[in-house]
Image (cartoon, rainbow, N blue to C red; front, side, top):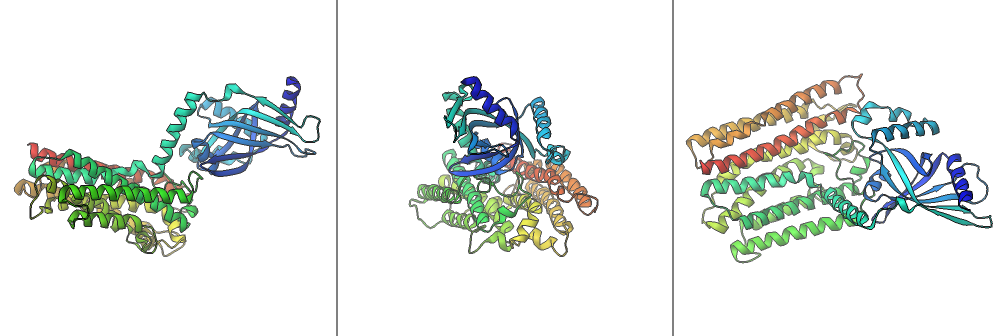
Length: 502
């Protein structure tokens, strides 16, 4: 019976060239038809890595398939449960490429595209079956099973990988790699206080940092929810690790309701931490203080960055809000907590930290600004009037010259400002310290970003270039801008600490 069943299964696999693939994450199910090739019972298929099915497989590799060859009479099919994974071995990927081309050449152009390969857009996937059900509804034996226990994950592996995937899912939802935007100003605020007074309340520092990260997480997730409602992320075809949101909803990894709930929980956590800190340094949770107003301003900016009715980012105020929130508000809030906890003074000495926060504020604004180049088309389509849209529109082709001039001028201004502030620190140590001149070192990164950006602009205006692919070529400028922001903030923080030590 086993050999007979094997023959029937293999005959159906060999006679079919496409299957229906079902994937699911957190009750978000998806189904699609894909061309496939089989090597024995193992099934290979090609897809683009940003597709919904590929995204869901990375989080939940358990899939179900239905194979039904064309022309099959009656109700006869294979129902397959299996474990799917991306093929990472180069030799196996080449084998999958050849096998799939023998089935169809529909995707040959994309499979051989060097640009798509370089940018990790295309992928080959393998399904190892755990159960194959042979269905022939009009046969004597309507259902027959073949199991593949060797393809199942062990209990321990399933638990460990499941936990790791779940953690990765939530880290992606809150866009954890961008928490550097919060870490930078909070560390800077504490270091400016240390420069002035030589002490730090580390417990309050960590609570401040944790509260700031929760606020940032809530802002990111709320942004994704609001951009889903406006369809901004849905129409964005140029999403990358630096723009277009986390894509949790679009990839079917979380429902809109769950994304909304996570945003609410993050903001509740932020408020509770902020009120607790306020109680520690002022005696009451709701004591009227600069910290309370910093918290209110930060929460409002986070919620209404993309949320109706204010939608700051849709009206061109998003960049300003980000600069304020991830610049002076967080830096001065961190500084204020330290001063009131350790040396409560009637007159808060906020001028040094305010001055120190300016470069960090400008640079985080530039991170958002340069990311907006790739978002231009989607933002314009949904009426999101960012400054990139305002400065670039006017013809069929986006004119990025004006916004790039703003970007370049802002970088020159930032490093000139650091140089002047550092020189002032030589003569007026109450304002700054010359050690912050260390923060001029990342000007090399900024110079590289400017050069790469200008080369990219020349290509953008060249009619012979493929403008559908060019936005991805700007990613090196995105990376350089992020690196410039965090390295400048880090060196400013180190500079103020060194200013007290030496």
